[in-house]
Image (cartoon, rainbow, N blue to C red):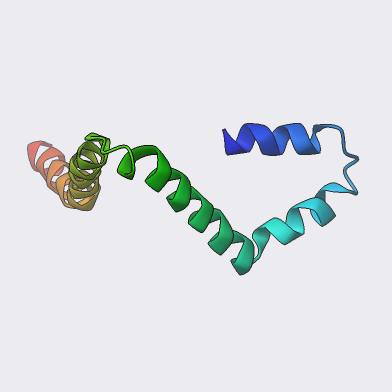
Length: 86
């Protein structure tokens, strides 16, 4: 969604104008404000409405995180197993 909006903004610009347009977006303050705005939107959409979705987000996020943490170890095991068969 955000990338689509960014694309719409820079679509009509000339190539020389794009870096000047993007430079303010790469600052720490811009990132902080974007995160704050995102958290405020999340709070308004899910927390204030007493939705169950945040619980599901935490559960699925935890499962994905644990999978990503275990992935390198699993890949090492599979690679070791393949070398043992040859």
